Length: 475
Ligand code: NAD
Image (tube, rainbow, N blue to C red; front, side):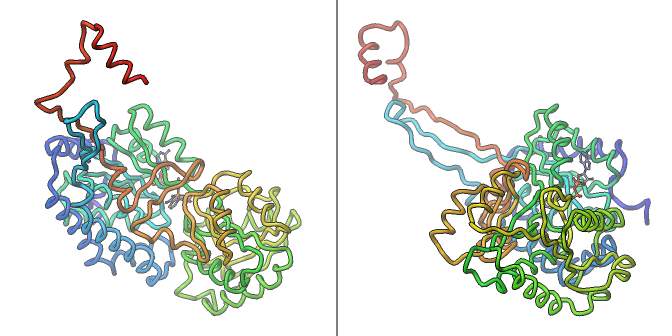
């Protein structure tokens, strides 16, 4: 079985596949809507017809990943995104007429979106299917072909995706790459026509450096610390329920999980009580709970434990919301844990948490919270719980984040018509929906000169008539 997998794990096979896919893209500069829709239809069929085995493979990679969560957070958004692209690809691909200024009339101007060719997609481990299929959807809608590099931490999903992709697609349409970090480096050094990387900010820097050597444009979907703010007067129990729900999905291993919470000074006890209620209701008996996901591996488990120990050593109070420590270590199911009295001296406030640990910060005046957020790296997501519309508008205007959900968490990512992407340390560029199509298209401007035109008036020899014209042009 191992030898027969089409998963690429060697540099030579990677380079051969890249050459094949790139050559096929060069041989097909115009890609009809029918072909784009067909590729999207096959992508949809591949995900829909194999959802059970995908969930099983992802669970094998995690040790424990809720099948329901995989269906909700990997299969459903993948299918929704593909269907949205299938519905809109004809309109997105249509050349757009643009106005022409008086001087160049009656010429015509238009923008023609064209496939750029061969796309590289690098995928992290936390949502291995959705974060491969989402970018692939945009790449196919825009008429491209692609190579997808899967994380070394999700070998079962990578192998399955490679096997299935080879059944639903030709080898010169898409290829799936596995292997170690060395192969990942070789991957990002290939002269793709566009590279979309999803992963950590630290690795994003390496990827951008590698792409610079080829002048390959990059879209970087990175991570960071995404705050949740509860405004004065907002019901703390409602906010706590939504924040903990967002935090506990995939055991906090979500790029847009609320990383920490800002709440009014006098609401801490209410928040703890509400957080405990929601966690024990959602996950009674955490240890063997099939709905609660494990931390991906021992290294990440030790990293998260390290944050807790460091926070305790620096004066923080830890409030585990469910579960037992011993069992946690055996099954890598870390109980959702609040860190009270969190400060910037703690590692948990310096690094992206990416696990079920939730530091609590308090403010006296909402401005303090906004000042704190603005002093730090621009977050990938920001969550605001507030019913005062004017204040909501004020917070939106005064902060910059990759995306925002007001009065809930996570949901902006699920809107097919909203662009998705970070800013600053949390990323650059966008995909999803129309923006994904644009990211992987060259927007080629074309001017059509008309048979009758006044361009001759602007040619030498420059004389008195030209000077009169200039007076009008430069008025
Ligand atoms: P990571 O950066 O360690 O790895 C991501 C991918 O990059 C993997 O496929 C890996 O093999 C590859 N890679 C590693 N070293 C490389 C190199 N030198 N050159 C090229 N590729 C290399 O990230 P991870 O641990 O897999 O994922 C977690 C991170 O991803 C978190 O920071 C999280 O916030 C972020 N993330 C962001 C989004 C988003 O949409 N913005 C989504 C999910 C995860």
